[in-house]
Image 1 (cartoon, rainbow, N blue to C red):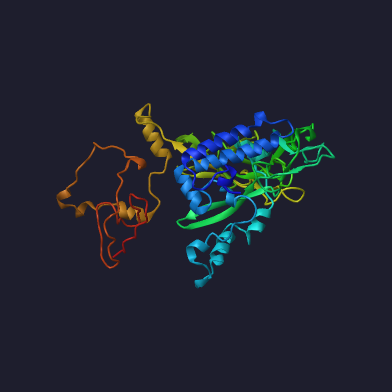
Image 2 (cartoon, rainbow, N blue to C red):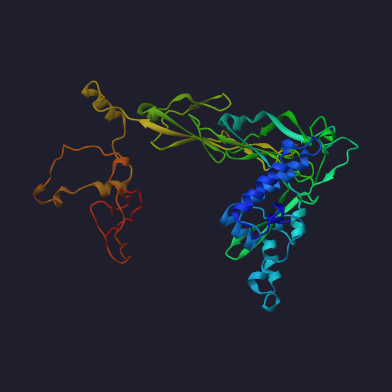
Length: 460
């Protein structure tokens, strides 16, 4: 039934005629004027009238309906109920006289929707929406494992009527909107001169294809076919799990007759930890010690682990800790998670490693109390450089200087690594056979300020 037929007017009717017809039919089929038994039919008819008036009262949408049988995103009634009115591409491709039959294009777009035909698309079993939950967890939770419990309220199929929505012996009436099919066809424009179709649940009968009188409805669900259920859901976070992982409880979302039940999915994200940083299955931390302990050794608790244990490290006397060194403790990282859970899955006994980056705090300037302290320190610490090549490179022959031309600098500053200038490497790289020298790079066996290794000069 087309929109003009619903309003009981001709397709040539004026805007005033459409408005007049709508008012007349709206008063006739208003649900408030219907009896209890006929109210459902009146509601369905009233929806049809309102829908038809909504489209035909708008000039642009009416023009599109007259051309396509619908407007983009609005159900055109001539294409909503029953069988299709024919191939919508025939008007644009001229029928069977073309090299390709118009039905080829028609079937092509239906296949894009995942169906071999419109009936198969309409008959595909629907699924209720999945429920998504997001929670924040701590690094301790991922280290030790955690059970998250949450209260869930969902719809389940009515236990009294088993999803029928009515009493046991109630006789249903066929829905006139979808002709008892429970679905309606929607024609949607996908481009200039191109349309496609898709099927949706009938809004009048909520996809059932039939309805019951008010007095025949189920007393427990009041005809809704579902009731609410509250239960406790448990999500197990296995030891060694990673931030951003998802736990899925199958078929724990809302139920509805004729539809597959969706899942409940919980996604957990790890909050930043004040001490540890996780990289893969390894843990990283930082610890600062004074220079004297870096030279003479120490024995102390460096960190409190994620399970509450204190991690104590003792270095032997004479073991020198240098800036940037890491103390690696094997097997004290995160538990290594297996790919599955259950009797033969979950977390294994294997664990990653713990890396503690040692930062050395040097004494402040003028740290000595007496000048004799400097002499004592010089006598205690090695004063010679062990590398002969470094000694050779750094030793300057005074005889090679013209007239012993030596300039003494006492006014200087200490530059930190992160305070060095940012050099843009926009000059072309010299050819291999060319020699390239500047004031900083190219020292024999030393790296440049950017940290890249430089080739050693050949000794002559």
